[in-house]
Image 1: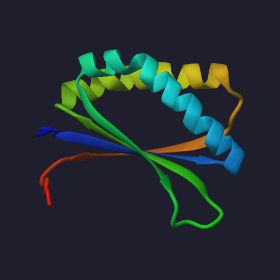
Image 2 (image 1 turned 180 degrees about the horizontal axis):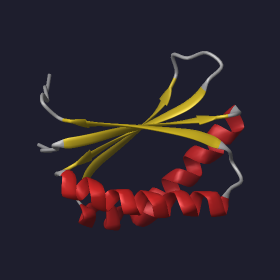
Image 3 (image 1 turned 30 degrees about the horizontal axis):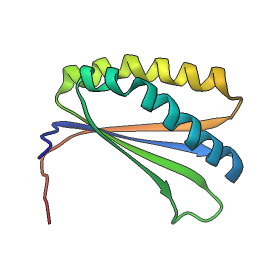
Length: 109
């Protein structure tokens, strides 16, 4: 079982559905290219989802889990590099919002 102590939930809002689709594909490529670096930095898991309960909004959510605060901080450096790659490879405008939390309960059903 994964023992994460910190999580971050990041949403990215896109202007159009097509920008969102291309953005998802490009971001997945970048994260796959950097996956080993994220693992070495202490990232434990990443889950991506398309938010579907907001009509007319093109939003993607990413949940990241980390071993500890040190791992989270190392991954932040990698995120900046990933965002630079995304901006270099695409001209897609998006608004990114980040929320972070300390895990205090983890239930498996």
